[in-house]
Image 1 (cartoon, rainbow, N blue to C red):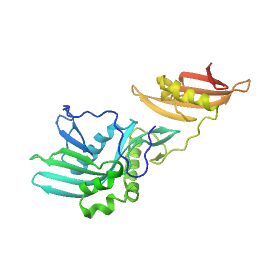
Image 2: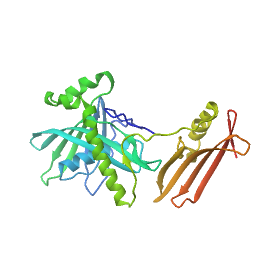
Image 3: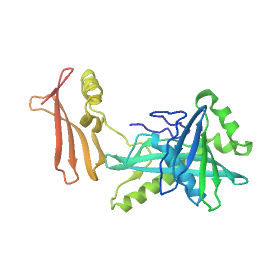
Image 4: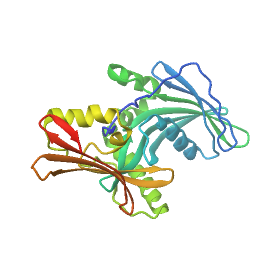
Length: 284
């Protein structure tokens, strides 16, 4: 799974469609948004709101949908300042997004971004609602600092060029939202943005590559199971399933890797075991 670095990181796009208009209605209100990242522009649609803070939050989550999806999406942001020009409001911000999911029983950030300097332009309508017109992030690589300075006034440079210092504030916001979600579903668990330590299977390297790369890539069940020794959870058709990967020994002393899909009451839905014989995983 994709993990974040704890500072500036741009999102990875699954697909980029340029020059195509997409229309959808959310909450009965249509909003067209032009997004610019470097030289790329994407047009999408989404709902609006009468509260600027909520509009910013909503925009960040919408952009975060390009990440590997988890159980619950969160965001963190700090508005550094705004500029108003007639009915247009430019928002200078630091933004972060993260999908949370269960790994080894911990509700953690499984994919997302670090703190990203972000400029949003909203249009305020007569009824008080905000329409998101543009969503801009700096370019990657060697052009990053120059791109940031083009987007932000000089008075914000100290903040946007020292993202390590700012990320912890955004991460705390995400953890708070994730904890509130768990409370709403009646689940108690540790919540944290930081990486969950994982123990990898200790088997023949060639056999491991076959099982956890080649076999997993061609099998949806194996692909959903953890690549580590432990558990992860998925909600499928409103039912929570626990996927588990474990290692043990066969009676004749060979390593045994077992993959299981279980319900919350430990009812096994699917199970597969591989006996590791030299460099070959053998399905039992």
